[in-house]
Every structure is written in C-alpha cells, then in structure tokens.
Amino acid sequence: MAQPFWESKTLSEMTRQEWESICDGCAKCCLHKFIDDEDTSEATEMQPTDYIESGEQMHYSNIVCYLLNDKKCECTRYQERTVLVPDCVQLTQENLDDVFFMPPSCSYRRLHEGRGLPSWHPLLNKGKKSAMHKAGMSVRGKVVKDNEVDMEYFDEHIVTWPLNDVD
Ligand code: SF4
Ligand code: SF4
Image (tube, rainbow, N blue to C red; front, side):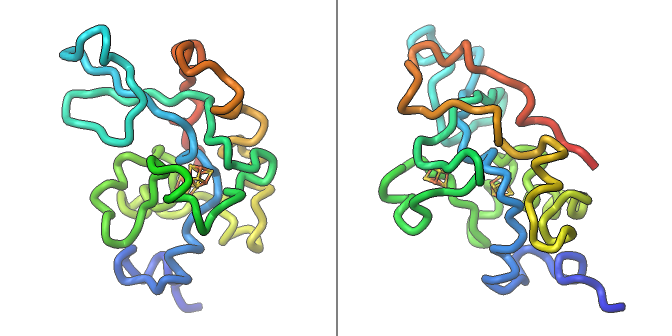
C-alpha cells in the first residue's frame, strides 16, 4: 500500500489541502499563553504574548479565545480571524520556524519533529474528532472564554494539560 502523504512528504512539500488536513482541530493554539522570564520586571512579568525568546518559559492557561466554539473546537470566524484577533497564531508553510510555539501534541509540530501522527488524529479516524476528544487531547470541556474572565487574574488559570501528548 502507498505511504500516506504525511509520511512521504515534508510539511513544506504538501499541497494546501494536505497541509490544512494535518491540523487535528484540537484548538490548543487558541489558548492564551504567558511568558515567564526571570529578567522581566514585576510589571512585565507573565504578560500575554505571541512570541518567545530563548531562556523564557511559556505557560498555558485554560483561557481560550472568545471566537472559539468550545464544543466543536472550531473557530466561529475562521475567514476573518486574523483581522478580528490580531494575535491569532496562524502557522503556515512559510513560517514553519514558529512551530515550536505550538503545543507538543500539535500535529504540525509532531511531524516537524519526526514523531508522526498520533493514533487519535482525525486523518486516522475517518475524519472524525471523537478519538481526539476521548483521548483528552482537545480543549473541549476544559476552558473559559477570554471575554468572560478577568485577565488580571490570569495566574489562577495557568494549567499544564495543554502540554500533554498521548501516543
Ligand atoms: S495546535 Fe496545531 S493541530 Fe491543534 S488546532 Fe492548533 S494548529 Fe491545529
Ligand atoms: S480567532 Fe479563531 S483560530 Fe484564532 S485564536 Fe480565536 S478561535 Fe482560535
């Protein structure tokens, strides 16, 4: 049997459609992240961020973008997302160097690091996301929306589950 495209091609060799299908739809990239840098002052410490520098540590929160449908784990305004949410992280074939900014279970990151797709990935489950939800690898049932929480108390929302990777 022929090798599936995600095994025979690199991420940059994939067609647009193949590239899009690699996204498992976990929505972990829609979570707010914070940088903890020992060199920052109290005022700038643990600020929301969309970039990271060497020596800094990234923390995930359970606070998710208000545009996410947190049951389906789908963006409700996918076409307009980068305009409506300027820090919406959009990984593309052109900015693959930023893949380390994605959670360890992100399918792009897994392929980039040579770890293959996990058994719960929709591409290995007839296009369905249920195995992923069941494995606890999506944000479903674990998040609060950023328009419903006081971001001043973000430290109460720091969580480690987005760093989990199964299989
Ligand atoms: S973390 Fe990666 S695989 Fe998951 S939704 Fe975001 S881009 Fe897709
Ligand atoms: S705009 Fe959509 S894709 Fe971007 S962070 Fe928000 S829910 Fe996620």
